[in-house]
Structure formats: C-alpha cells, structure tokens
Length: 400
Length: 211
Image 1 (tube, chains in turn cyan, green):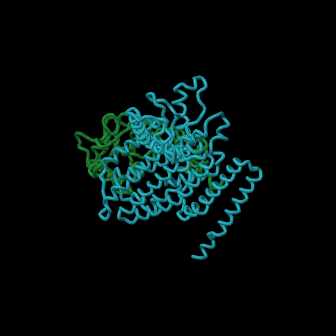
Image 2: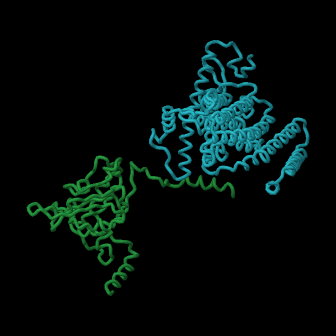
C-alpha cells in the first residue's frame, strides 16, 4: 500500500492528520499554481507574440494587462452555454471534464522543488511520486485524448467530428513517438519515478549541465520529445485540430461559455505540463547551483533555489513554445502524419535501441569505440531499409 | 537556415521599437492637412462666413451637403454679404472627407478640422446641421454629446485651409492669403515646404506666369 503511494518520505511513516493536511495543502497549491500558471502563460504568450509582431499586446486589464486572461475567463463564465439539438447530452457535458481533469492530474508527478521539512515531516515538493512515474503522464495524456474525441463525437455536428477525428489521429500518432522518446531517458535512468530521475541529474558543478542532465546524453530523444510534445498538445505548428479555415474551430466548435474555456484551459495546461516534464526528464528538474554565501541547510538553498531553478527552466521552455507559435505556419495534415509515422517514431525507436546497446555496453565493459559506430551504422541501415519499404510521395502520386 | 529562418525573423522583432501606438493615452501627431470633421467658420467680429452659395453642395462627390441660402435680414445681418446660409447640413454617413467643399468655398467658410472621434449611434446624430457645425463664440468646434474627444484636437483645429489657400503655391510662400477668423485671428503663414522642392516649384510658377 505504502509503495503504491510512492517513494515520498512523507507517506512512509505513520499517516496522521498532519500528513493528510500537508497532502491537501499540496494539492491545493498545485491546483492554484496550474490555474494561475495558465492565466499567466496565456497573458505572457500574447505579450511575447505581440513583441514578435511589433505590437503591444494586452495592456488594459491590470498592470501590463496581466489580468487579461482572468477577465476573459470571467466573461466566459457568464456567457450563454448553448448546446446543439443533435448532441449526445451526457457525453457532451462530460467531454470538457475528461479534457481538463487529466490535464490537472498529469502535473502531480512533476517535482517542482527539493526535499524539505514541513511541520516535522520530510516531504518532496511534488504532489505524488508514484513508482510508475512517467507512465502516469502518458496515461493522463491518453485520457485527455478521450475528452477531445468525445467532444467532437457528441456535438452531433460535422465540423467538430472532423476536427476530433483529426485530433485523435494526431495525438495517437505522436503519443507513440512521445513514449519512445521518454524511453531514451528511462534507459539511462533505469527508473520511472520522476523524483529518482531528477535525483540522478543532481548538480555537482557546471559540468553537470552536459554530463548529468539527460538532454545531451539523450539529445535525440530530447528533440523528438519536444516536437512530439508540441504535437501532443495540439500546439502550433501542429494545431490541425482547430484549423479555423478548414474546420471553423475544430472539436470545440459547438461549445460555448465556460465549457469552451475548459478546453482551452486544458490545452494550455498540457503545454505547461509537457514543458515541466521536459524540464524534469532532460534538464535536471529543480537541480541547479545553490547560493554560495548561505549555509547549504538554509531555507534559501533547500526551499527557494530548487523552486527558482525549476521555474526558470520551465519559463525558458515556455518562451520557446511561444516562439515556435509565433514563427511557424500550420503543417498540412498528410505531412503531419508522414512526419509522425515515417520520421518521428522510427527515429525515437532507433534512438531508444541505440541508447540501450550503449548503456548495456558501458555496464558490461564493451569497447564503446567499436560499439558506438557499429550501433550508429546499424541504426541508419535499419532506418534506410524501413524507408525503402515505404512508397515515396512520387510513387504515391502515381498510385493515385 | 531555410525552413527555420522564420525564427530569426520573429526574434528580431522583439528588439525593435513597437509600431503600435498607445492610442487613447497618447496620440500620433496628425498631418498638417488632416481631413476630419467640418466646421463652419465665422469672422473675427462674429459674422458667419457662409454666404449660402451652394458651391460646396454642387461640388460634393458624395452629395452629402445640403445648403439653402437666404437674404440677410437688413436689421440683423448674419453674414457680411448679401445672403447667408440659412440651412446647412452634412450627412456624415455619406461624407468621404475629400475636402472638395473646402476648395470650392469662396469665403473659407467651411473647413475640415482634425477631429475624428465623432462616432454616432443613430442616423439622426449622423446629420450635422448648422447648429452643430458652426464654431462657438471662441471660434472652437462645438463638442456634441455623442462625440468622444479623447485628446486636445480642438486646440489644433479650426478653419485652417493651407491646402487650398494661395500659399499652397510656392510663389506665395510666406504670404497670408486668408481672412481672419473668430477666436484665432489671422493665421500665421504656412511653414515652408520641403527645401529641395522649393526651387523646382518656383520654376513651375514662372512657367505659369509666362503662360
């Protein structure tokens, strides 16, 4: 039972009222953090895109327009919630929540700080540290897919159906690449628990950025993860599900008011979660240099700095997502699918296998100067053979 | 960079000054000859400049001006001349602000100000009659209840007609070719045009004089 709850030292001893309260407070903090985070992310996104398009962006609501998305949310709360006559009522009502709840839950496994002491209990600054760890993320993003699929299905309307079919096909395709990219890290770490993965990337000096953090040893997996995370969250340039020009809005066409807002909340929350997972898996999570001028046991070093490093890395990644959003045009649908099935999945698969060979070789004491080139040649050979089986676009044209 | 050159383009914009203005708080300076809402001007003694000749209505391409003239009452003349405009209406749902009425006016009675914040919410308000168009006793445009003046455009505006006054030709530069008006007096000469064009323009004027 205790193991099922995870490796958090908070849950390893007696579970008394204080422990329950700490867990509840942590839950509330994560909940509020995500809501405020989405609010700030949308505001920041609009500001940054405005920067990149020589505009000012929102500036009226609050200082620098920081309350703009709050105002939008309040407005959406008071809007009429219409429902098409042909809709499947119960599923129609359920779909937004199927979308939003996994988005909240997925963030639970993200370590946002170090291990600290609260009211005499040692605890990890993350909501849950289950042993299945990263698999939980994949499970949640899989359930989130149902929200989008059922939203389109239950609307009883054509455009949402087309949009949801697109969205589910796209998310299914990229989930495979996403999972295989994560394997590239898991082979290195040997564990699924996010806390254990973070602990393996501990800061020992400036060199840890390149040797201990997994982004460089697993650079291929890192790139694949970032791209498929963007596709998984329907983020531009992969926002095919809501291509207005073709679908008048996609799976959420028939939704209004706060139900519509829930979909957007979930979408942006997923972007934040995916970036947080990328920080956790590849960029060392909350690990970073402490403050030298105070004791290493000071609250500044145990509480503040890990949280600071986590959010700094998160913000850099989020800025990058906005940069991508501002720069790239939407992909064509067939190219999106080609890219997933002909490039991403094979590359992720080969990267995972190659990593496996090298890690095993290192443990077994094989000569890496021979193993590494051999693996690289083998990987390219397999990729070439695989691609030789796939008809090229020109051949496909002839078949059509 | 090829496919990824878009990233460079977007990030380069971050370091450039913003094109968008902070409109209601700060306004861009308007061009000297901005075409905004019309006013009907008065002379310095308070007499109306309009003589009801209907040339503005005749020239208006949008046919938005309606004017009727009448003989001045001998005991209480409205304008210095023989007749005055008893009815003067501009329909702003039709007006295209081409300024042709200003050019046509022989007495500089109708001019366009720099006021542009005069959106209206019903058709009745769209038709500005003489009561709304005539400048007040200080020579300023009258602010209507539905007009939203967010800046100080009224300070920059009045019967200003540089585009059509004789000083529009370079040969007349520095000479005042217009009458005084209520609240403002006689306008100072127009500031000089582009220096490089002045000599060229002077040549043109000579040709006109010869022709």
